[in-house]
Length: 89
Image: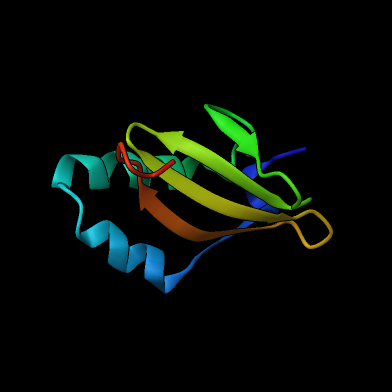
């Protein structure tokens, strides 16, 4: 179902901008996870967001990566990246 050749990955510009503000080691780790999304959308610590059929959250250490899945067009859209802190929730 999730062959790399068949999925298009789109990363919002705001995610790229936010990523540049993180420490280099975290940038590398998060970029790796983003790059692996087309291979397996549902691998790792993921959770479907309540009330939204197409939005998922992937945890990468202290960071949360939010993405939409368009099954009909086979597109993954990474639209938000946030750092979780003690005041996040």
